[in-house]
Length: 275
Image 1 (cartoon, rainbow, N blue to C red):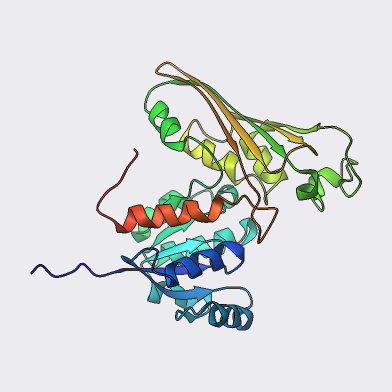
Image 2 (spheres, rainbow, N blue to C red):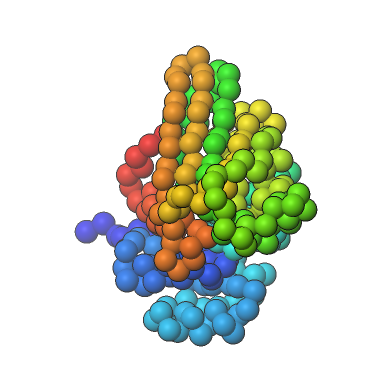
């Protein structure tokens, strides 16, 4: 009988709603090929209590110790903490599966850094549709890429970029209003908590500067709507995702956490569907 392959050791950098979803599903045996071995978070004591409540056996450790316990580390923290998490993981030669793509511009040499240390970077699909098709188009000639996003106004409360321009989304909004037009890089800088999708699209396609973004605050939608329009010599794409809000965190789309689970399934399994 052939020996069973060792299970892929996974760590979590961040233990909010997404991290806890992943921990619970892995503890339930959703991915038999994967073992959750370690967790880190800003508040280690709270993370330990939450892990115990979920019945998760993984150890809770400081970020600096996480790479010693895992081969793949899922970054499910925040865009502002992305650079330090990424640097710690990649310097140890581990694989980083990242959700906070919006933090990538703050670490501009991340790809070269990973290559120097033998690390690898994978960006989870999250709420963005059609990344495989966009990557395929990028192997040819892409003429234009545009992202149109419609977001519930409540998700913009506390955004400095909008408040500095006189928007107050604590008050009811009568109709949809356009709040931003610019490049993907500018969108990520203005809305670091929201526009991981713009950076993921840029990385898959034609870069931060050539990817154009239009953002609307829309009071009449249940969750974020993202539409990608792409014109290339090989294909014309129009892709829309109508996302349902997470019950645990209404500012996050429900599909975010399952997209990470799907990525882990692909990384640990013998079958890879998609480009």
